[in-house]
Length: 89
Image: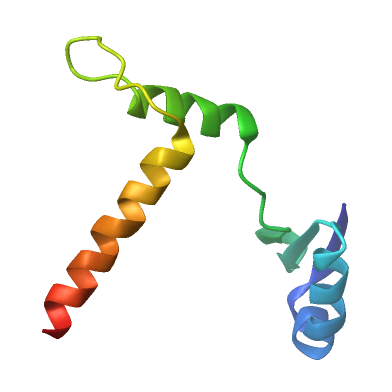
């Protein structure tokens, strides 16, 4: 990880941002003291996503809702579509 001064960040921000897009992490300093971190946005954690999906499938009394996640997603899209349609009409 590189440490760069705030003045250099101001003059070459686009270059540093391009490096961050490639996965590089950069510490920004002021008078030698760290003040901020430039780092790439992390993607969704597949394990955590699966935990959330599993929790969505379970009701308050422990029974599974059944169905596949694609069924839930389709139902949600229809519901959202209906809300949008009702808002327009």
